Image 1 (cartoon, one colour):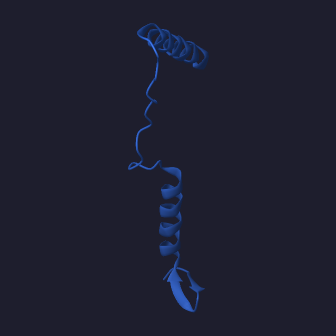
Image 2 (tube, helix red, strand yellow):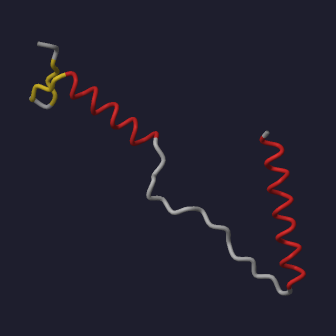
Image 3 (cartoon, helix red, strand yellow):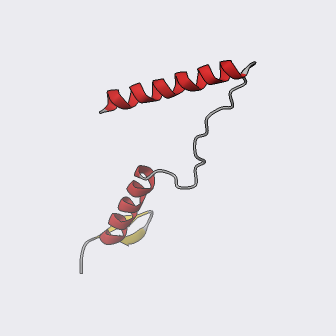
Length: 70
């Protein structure tokens, strides 16, 4: 039979330790699927022109950010 370790007075097979290690690593590495999606905050503009200006500015900023990433 394969090797075993004594942990807290109990004999634990090596494959149990490897399965626990891989499971713990996956839980840490994978993102949380239940996390809420990030939402953009509401724009509280005092006029429609201001809201349009803010939306255009944000759109241009996102486009320039995408260009920098590529």
